[in-house]
Amino acid sequence: MLLLLSLVTGLALSASGVTTDKENDPSQELFQDMQKKVNDLWQNLLYPVMPGNENNGMIYATCEMKPSSKIDADKPQVTGQVLFRQYYSSGRLEAIFYLDGFPLDNNQSGRAIHIHELGDLSKGCDATGGHYNPFSVNHPRHPGDFGNFFPKEGKIRKYKPNLFATMFGPYSIMGRSVVIHEQEDDMGKGNNKASLENGNAGKRLACCVIGVCNKNLWEEKLSEVTDKKKRGLNKRAQN
Image (cartoon, rainbow, N blue to C red):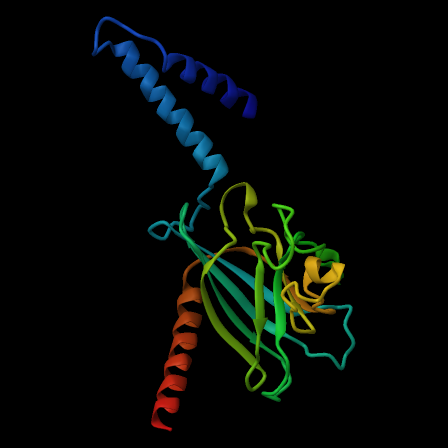
């Protein structure tokens, strides 16, 4: 398939330089049409739109969070979803973090959440590899360095827009994992090697693999997250 595309691409690119004395030469129009089709093929390979998931150009994904099989029973048993959406093919990524199972104490420290390189859960969350770092930069500049989240009443309900990661192209996060860590992310300020790799965020409490979904789950969770935020703002205003 790739060989065929390469050959057709070569023909199309060669054809683009062909000149003719007739402006409306049918052969020139044929070559231009061939070139457009080749460009469309490459575009679809680099930025595939998943069948059954065309929502006016918006693509949706979910990550169904489960506790790591390698953590102790007395650690938080985190469940829920991390949801993504992005406008095809150059919109900014948005995410909803809808998670349960944290201690009920509202004074606890933050929990780091990152995208990891592999979607391998064969050894719990330990098999997901390191942070997804396609550009070989220091933490916290990895595409999936989402920072710290502070649970309230045992829950995380957070919407984040304008994220650096993407669901499209050669640096897609699709099929990779989201990992929740036991500790707070030091954001690369820990003055040691681990800080620049993973923020010294500690053990991996829970993880999941990112996969395509429809828009229903996103719309359901977004309304709940935004309604809760509005209620909190109204409560503070009344006080």
